[in-house]
Length: 138
Image 1 (cartoon, rainbow, N blue to C red):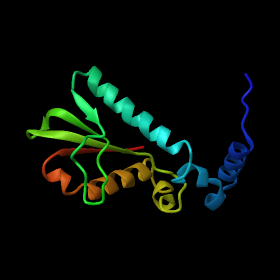
Image 2: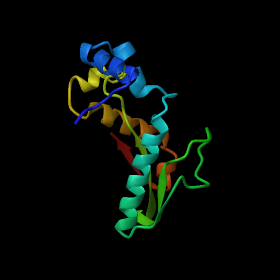
Image 3: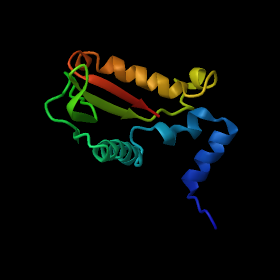
Image 4: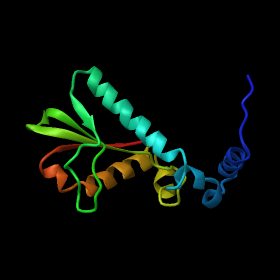
């Protein structure tokens, strides 16, 4: 089996291997990266399909749940989940070698995901008063 990588993929792999964090990991966390939206949509779809297979009716990108800045959670269960509240979820994938995560990820496994989940909880503090929040950080 032969694996072929384009020039950019090789450049990123070498940068990561050599520890060139500022340049080598840019492709993993760049907000303009072409694969970023597709990965997020794929994870959100995976969660939604899992809930559906478990018989839990839910919707992706629920309408009417916008925050003041226009952001909304990735999904919502249509039946009460906990304490007679529907559950919302929001997915994020943390870049473990981003400068903002290095101190945490070098100290413990899963540190970047934990930070991402904490940021989601802070982001949806107001929504947590009426819904159960399930932040999903990877």
